[in-house]
Amino acid sequence: MSDKYIMDGHKLFWHLDRVSAWEKGERIAPLHIDVGLSKGCNLKCIYCFGELQGNKYMKGKDVYFPREPLLKYMREAGEAGVRSLAIIGEAEPLMNPHVYDAIAEGKKGGADISLGTNGVLLDTGSQGEEALENLTWIRFNISAATDEAYRKVHRSRDFETLMEKIRFCVAQKRKKQLDITIGMQMVLVPANVDQVLALADLGKTLGVDYLVIKQCSDTKDSDLGVYDRLGEYDSFEAILKEAESKSVGEYNVIVKWDKVTNKGERSYAHCLGAPFLLYSSGDGRIYPCGAFFDQREEEFRLGDLTKQSFKDIIQSDRYWDIMEKIRNIDTRQCYSNCKTHNINEFVWKIKHPPEHINFV
Image 1 (tube, one colour):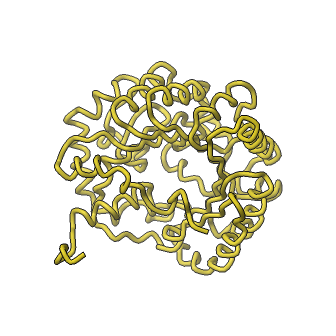
Image 2: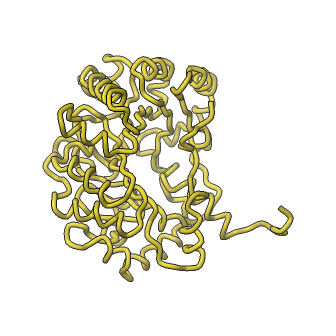
């Protein structure tokens, strides 16, 4: 089954106007931003990369992007030329009480809006219904298919609550014939590979549009205990292919094969893709890479959206000075399979063409 969403790649081919402007050295607006809304989370998943970015779990429940600057940001981003905003961040966005207003405001601003969440806190009343009407997609992060496994992987007793929230979304989509894609995402680590097939079946039963099985990002120091074990992923091939075979009709099981099997290796030496994809943190600060949320923070902070407008930030000299600094970082020190990875592979080739390019 093909990946009709191109989750295991990039979509810059459909934004060549922005790519061309970047190639000419123009100061472009990013195409996409991963938007954090909170520094807290109600779960404590065993593979949480957000923990390395300053996610404080329940201790961070009161640290979130304040309402007025958040709504201004969501509105200004679309007006500035940002084409999509994924409310996903380093922690759980639904811990921010203003998340539903942010979704509506972002949509009004002209950007496509999406939500990545563990789903437990999703409102099933009017706020949740309105959110589904404004979202291009909603994705539930779930890496275990039973209550028992969910308690081990996500360290939570909220499995049945999550099932209710997913069923609510599917029912609303069908009832109102909403143009929204509903998905589930599994982060694959050696400890939960036994859940792959059961999750593929669960997604089909729930009536979602897809289950995507992705790699686990980790630092080169293996802070999550995964980077040192990436060689084991080759042995998961048979079970992942069996999961893919459970795709049927409009339901897709998608494996991010490239990132699952590349052992964290890169084909590019430097990060050129940062101008196309930004990351804003749950406290309202914005960066070229999520790795700087909690380390070298002052050095790589592009701006503070609680104090500055988005437009002023992306037009500032500081912003472009930091982009140049990022461009010179040796990516051998970067964490594995970052979200800018596929973009980097593409723009690196543009800047480093082969010999005899006219022989197409």
